[in-house]
Image (cartoon, rainbow, N blue to C red; front, side):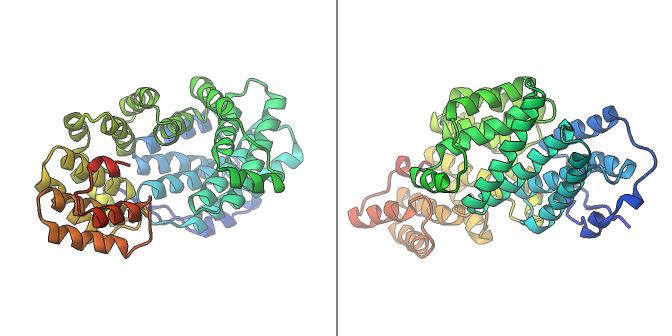
Amino acid sequence: MKQKLKYSKTAVIPGLILALLLFTVAHSTSTIPQKEQIDTCILTGVEETSNFEFNQAYDNFNQIYLQDNINPASYFYFAWLLSKMQDYYLTKDNKQISSYLKYTDLLLDKKLKENDKDVDALFYKAAVYGLFAYMEGSQNSWWQSAKYGKKMRNYAKKIIQIQPDNADALYFLGTYDYFADIIPTTQKFVRSLLMIPGGNRTRGLAELKDAVAYGYYTKVEAEETLLYIYVYYEHSCIDAEKIASSLIEKFPDNPAYKLALSYCTYYKQEWAQNAKLLEDLPPHYSYLKKYGHASVVYEIEYWLARIYLHMEKYNESEELLLQIIKEKPTEPRWIYQWSLLSLGQCYDLRGNTTEALTYYTKALQLKNYKNAYSKIQWRLKNKLTLPLSATDY
């Protein structure tokens, strides 16, 4: 029997079991819901996920399953929901997500065997391989990610052949075109050996913008993808701020969008405005630490500590950094080492050289993330305070 996710008052605890994936056609319900009903569940669930309303999103995706337990959409969105929750705070468990995706893929194969021009089935095929590609990329398995990305691209191309104006397909094509073009030259060479198509950065951005403007299922995802591209890769604050403000207005309870916006105000050195943007978030979302790595919370705490350093609020910065160091988060992987480094800077700026050297030494004993070693070694060699501007990334 299907078991529902176990809930806490404020967050979803992942209790989806793999037995759910073993249902066969014999268990299919007799009443097939109308496409409009399914679309309502999907679109509402996507928006709820974007607003950190994970319980409600699960309920919407579950409605699809309860009415038609062989509908690929329900299994795909169970996987997608879990991947989002893991991005923000849950402990990683890609095996569970993979099980949903593999079962989705089996159902889609049957649909495409009956009709190889089934656009909905082709869409979910692209979505399945897109999520597989993302999972592999997040584990630095770039070649496996590229292979899945190629499959995603191929299914999106098939959709365009059938429906040239399908904007959802443009989301997949835009994601592939952009990221395939920005990978390092050495990876491009190996990619060519694997016969994986190249991308086009400019075309990818244009395709993603069209998906935002005209997309149906992928509109929110395309907008979020563009936000992170403009923040992390294009470093275009003008574009990023516009998208972040739009997402925050629609989804005010998602702290990740405010964090993304804060990167822009940070690099513009708008310290007071930046602090105001982030200060209320750590206590509001601290409960997430009970459920996994809570990377979004730790990033907010880290950057708020950096803001306080610039504002010369050293006590407040020290408190946040010591908390991060005490809890020793594993995600994002760089944050523990860079909290040690930043705390060393905090003590340096207060004239406490002994404490500063203690934390620099601890940071040097860890794996080198984001070139931390060279920053600390410069400090130790020159016996000068390491400028904050040298570590503002």
